[in-house]
Image (tube, rainbow, N blue to C red; front, side):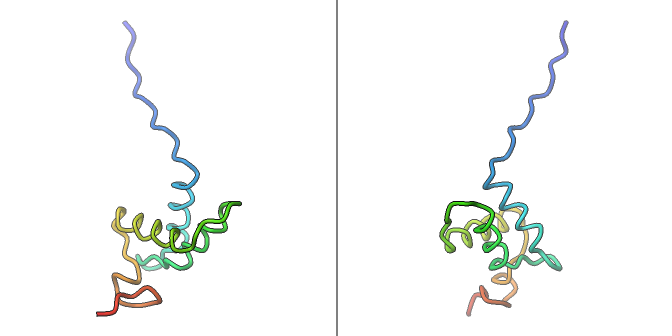
Length: 82
């Protein structure tokens, strides 16, 4: 009788990998520098990706992972003005 092997998780696509990599490299003291991460994400691909889309992707990924951004802390370029 064969022992069933666990299924392998599919490899993450290039965009997901680039997002995670840019988040990791641009996080200092638990806060993501969204501008730097978005800029890194833009340069990671040969095709042009809109800066606003990169910022949204980085912000959404940070929220999903529970990582704070400057908007959350009220500092930096992307701070929410109250």
